[in-house]
Image (cartoon, rainbow, N blue to C red; front, side, top):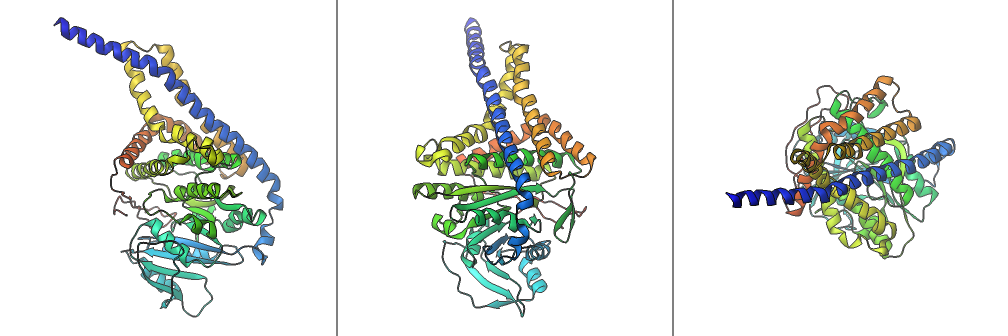
Length: 494
């Protein structure tokens, strides 16, 4: 009996010691991560001010008609997108840009995606030798062009090999020096190409990649493939995701661009110099986060070659995408995203902390390891250890309040700043109820949502570490703006 009491006393003492050691570490971590996001927000403010001052002199009208504007190949990988592919391609063909082509790569769809394109654009199969600039896995079955008209459209059908492999086929088919990679379900503003291509015209020798702002189309009014009236999503889940997109995908990336450490260009809309992409080896079909992996590999290639280069974020609201409106779909998305981040950081671990790679190796990658990769581990550890410490008397009430202030109140303030900065800069929403709806999302993000996403991200990290099969969830759409939109969790994609 005495032995059992001594054992329990020893365990309790060890637990007290563990919590005593970790409590200050946890608070310091949350103070650091929120301060980091706040600094990125402040850097983004400078970029927004600069953009607003230069907006009247952007020269989009001149670029739209100039023969010196570099031509672009728009690559759209498509897999089971029959419901909206025709509308998406038509919207792409109506973009304002002097010379461009749209290359659609059907990655072995089983729902009639190719048939829908063939009927809408009167496609005919042609003999076409596909170059081998970058390696591909899925064989190209056919290449089709519109009959009897100068429509700048190329449609390729290939054996299923995943999104990255479809993009590699598009890279090989592309005729022009700039590659625009977009999702088949993305909605672009009419001058999106002009905006994202401008850095290439301003600094043609150094810029190798640009990315643009991706907003949420949920709740927006969409007509003929264009967002004509932005609104906040009607559901709380959509509003919380809007806050995430503003903080991380707008202000966060604008801040990293200002620092010269931009690591992620959204797969939904990015522009790349073809020669740089080919030299880097194209997309990695083994990485589920192929968009970010390409950007890091471009950094690595340019640094190792001793090249002077830039990767730029364009702070224009130019691309719109549909966010999951069900927890089941959102869980798969966040799990997949964090798995991709884990795989990327493992693949390029030699760059982390390496002065050879400049700001990328010494600042950006370490930040992503400490404050992105490990964030769900620390968050969930804090959620377990702090209440347990209060329960056994190892943590006093003052410490509990300090933890809540550092972890959640500070994060709420950072999110409020993000929303306020974005609204002041772009005035995206025309109705006050949309603005207030986003502010409601700021508060709701910290009550249950953050904890759920931390768990999903932790699962994604575990999947990457023990090599689980790569699984994609599918979102089946009936078109933007349709109240009958249906989402399904379905077919795996390699």
